Image (cartoon, rainbow, N blue to C red; front, side):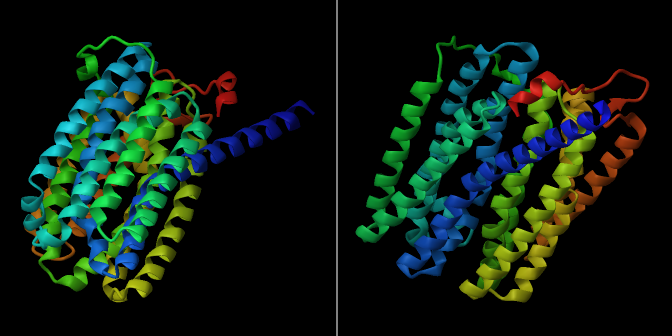
Length: 428
């Protein structure tokens, strides 16, 4: 009888974990898909499909956003849990705001040069690209608060704000664009309201803190991710230029796939986010989470395919080119659960240096292929090469250094890396 109850309890607990994965992944998906929908809807309102290309033109800057959030929010919260230093969450966020404002204002000031670098019409795209860069500043600041909520196990509250913020963003942009013919007015109205939103949110969530420079210590907790995203910026900043030179049919196909898969890639980051949160709180179960992550990834891949094919039929993209781009993305997605989990384990529990070196070396390979291969598929070739190399490295590392005992990952001949704590599962 006791055994039956224990089995039921474990099944119920696993359902809660799976629900949590979908909840966090869903929140990240919403946060990513709304700006994408904004460009799609705006292109219909203005009657100009070129507006969709703003997504691809500004895509490299998304990795700048990820770098800042990773260093000043994610790493800060991991460190807070591991070192019990909660003041530096707010101090790191303060410096993160300073850095994000400075970094995104640079391309805003030199916006024409940025657009021309990609071989596009600066006169047409200027106002849209400026809006995107200014929105990135607001989104970055907003993410500092949301990341803190996730690490405090306030998933529902975080998702509520993600939904409210993004629906406000979409509604304001669309409605104001329908009312005003000048996009500049729509841009000012949307950004002003969103700025007020985050100021109010910060006032409610922020506590008194002391400003210091200890954020440099955050680096060890996210070093591999930071290095990876710096290279991702370089890959897409220079690699997309090659793709754009191949012709408008490739630009449209690449934009179509990017519009449909990017939000799902962001949703998949829930896998590593949960690993980071639970490892920092010593309650992670490897076997369970890998199984849940594979199920989640399978659903994400199906939705990605359906959305991509549907949009290509709507916007007139050449389906054969779209499917080539899409196949690269799907192949990479299939390996993502294992790669993310092993990378997070290695970074936080075994060797940050080793994990950083692995990601650094293979990102160099990806940059070289993406930049020097003259082909509209250059970034995808680099992506697959990195995927195979990373997968192989983590498989070897998994076999050499780790073993699974009762569902928990351990270092061979050492104590458990992670111990799942039942009394903390109530927070899930």
